[in-house]
Length: 164
Image (cartoon, rainbow, N blue to C red):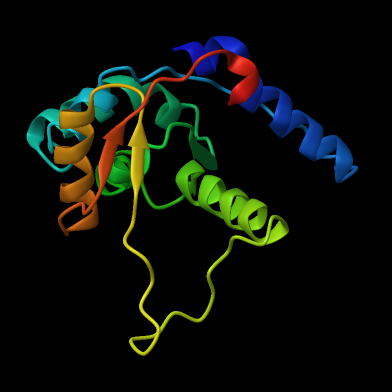
C-alpha cells in the first residue's frame, strides 16, 4: 500500500513515456494487493486462495483491458503464474524483481564487486545473507525460493538511515 500511495511507479511510467516522446496516451491504474505478501511467505503461490485473491485484486484491472501489469513488489513475481492466468493472454507482466536484480548487478559491476564467469574450478565464496528483521521467516522463505539451504544468515541492526 505504501508503494501505491507513494505514486512512484505512476511517476516513473509517465516520465518514461515522456522521455520516449510517445504521442500515445498512457493510462496508469494502481492497485494495492497487501494479502499477496503473506500468501507468498506461506508458500501459497499457486493455491486456490491465491487464485481467489488474484481475482479479487486484479479482476477490475482485467476489465479495464490493460495491456501491461507491473508486479510492483519483489514478492509478486512468485505469484506470476496465478497473476498471468487471472489477467489473460493479452497482458504483459513486468517483473520488478528482475529490474532490482539488474540494478544490483550494475551497481556491483560499477563498484568492482561483480563476480563473473563462475565455474567449478573456481567456486564462489559462500553466500551471506543479512536481514534487519524476521530472520527465521526469511530463512524459511529463502530456502523455499532458492531450493537450497542457506549457509550464512545473520540478523543485523542498522543505525541511522544515512548508513543505508
